[in-house]
Length: 428
Image 1 (cartoon, rainbow, N blue to C red):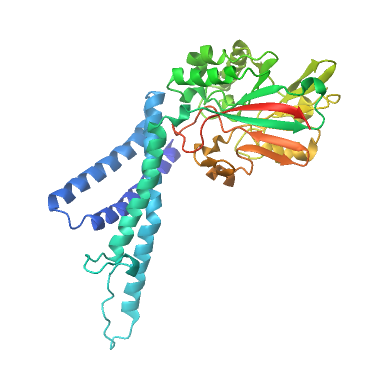
Image 2: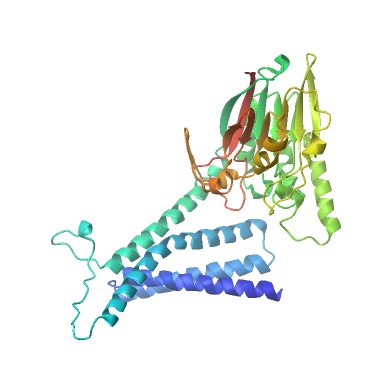
């Protein structure tokens, strides 16, 4: 407890230093305003900063509702994340002024230095206009840059993009696909994170879109909850509406194990997991825990393999056992794998299980931020996961990464919208 409190105090010191640094830019920008205006800006700035830091402590140490805690931490993140964008400009100004001071100090005393003009860049100067110093220019630029992520992230929340479900359609060609399964339609959703939802009607609307596609099979590729099974209580009658004639097949994701909260005992944590298994059953979903199902049709077969979470990162569980899950699938000409974390594909699947034709994953959320316009795709997620959204191929094997049905932490999406994927399998 003492170590945790010490860490929080160190974080608080860093945050206050950031606020002090930022306030210098605000003072520079508004120094020509009336004294009363400057005083009101001073009060407003430090009141908001104090309330933001206080909210962090309240969220950590006091029992408040999940929704309020999320709101507090999201505001905290947006508030300080935005300020970070201004810091480089302020730092450049300080370095520039520091260099000028050193030059003045170490020049020979007999040489009289001319004052270095604090004028704006030539490109920004207009004849007859009021001059702006370099310090003013950099300070105002830093503040302007900081408003961009601040405004964008708030828009991502207000616009309710987290419920703007989009259907993506993919035709997948598999050379070994049996004729009996040619043209089969598969729907995929991933990363529901039911504990984050706040609009049940909107969530139901997405499920209606999925059902309207009349898929033969539906895959759910993990993370049903954020932390604990009771999050699903109010959404059972939404997700049990997902129907497919061949079946709905599901797996677990890293959040489903309850690793991101404290439990009264190991038994309580295990009980939560057992309860989650029952939720999948009550939804009518076939939960695959390192096992497979052989689909037979017209005398031909297709294997659906599902593993528990397996990640190449040490931060996430490695409970998946492909050696167990693939037992009995040797005679199936096509094998489809459900594995939550896309890093599993390159780390194990393409290396040791070349007979797996395609893997379906989720996990990345596309970081809920980025650009997807036609073939143009970018997100910070790509610097963590080389395969973060869409279809990937390596020799004859394929991977599809769904960017998620729900959301986690930040209750918004910017550019990367919630996804329902519809696949049609065709014989190559």
